[in-house]
Length: 376
Image 1 (tube, rainbow, N blue to C red):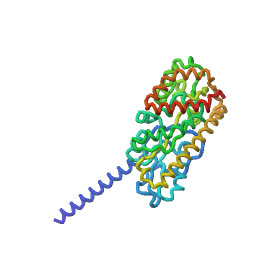
Image 2: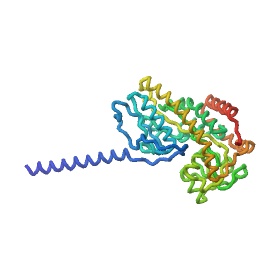
Image 3: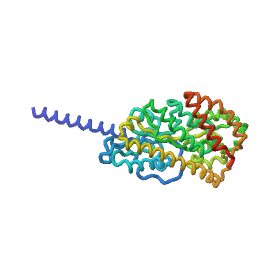
């Protein structure tokens, strides 16, 4: 009898150890960094020191404060992360210990493609992504990259501010709140040979990084090659492509000046990033914290847009210093390009309701007058 009990005790102990190992493995899997596409860098600042790279406890990491996990695909040291971290730090300093935001950069909490659904369902409280990434789910997100919607980085910043309430309204049906959004600089042509006329586009092998850029290249007469944005250097150096449509920050970050000499400054389309929150989480906040989110979101939008405007211009100074030939596209030629893309722009506007489309048209017309295209 004693031997039977001894054998049973050993069996129970082995089973308990196996269960412990299994649970530990599950926990490790949940906090394993997930690879995600990395949106472009946008300015040069030092890496923040307070962002976390591991998922926090959903209970609390700051006394009795409620934790808001903010998933982001941009890594530590990326300027986008730095700007988001500034918003996080201000919120945590002013929330009075009631709430605390914990930033999870570099896809350490979620892959970018999973962020929309996670915020929608409350799987994560907050997240950030390039707005147009989920345009197939939220049609108005297409307008974040509306071809020739703006003429300059200054107009792009103003366009983002005007679009914020429209994004928020469209996201309400998904249970998501738009906290703030900002320009990450529009697209210009980076190439191994001059691209200065419509005729230069004919047959041009050009990297495309989104459905919008693919259509732009096609309509201008080029041959689009779908390649991840981070692989532009290799594609250009190996002559897989002859050009790419990118922001100046991408040139600086990935040293595209080493493999492409020419830059056509044309501001083909705007580009934007947004920070979002689960709407139920927001509605359950006390009024003073809701007001804080709204206030700091507005401030973050203004300050980040201002940072991007400064950076856009400094990028071009830097590219010139690096020996690249900067060619401001003449207005008459840019208008020729714009005519080719008008039907596509109208197609994107046709994906939203008429009232919204008309409002966007009115906004872009006003910005066109306020910020006319210049060749400087």
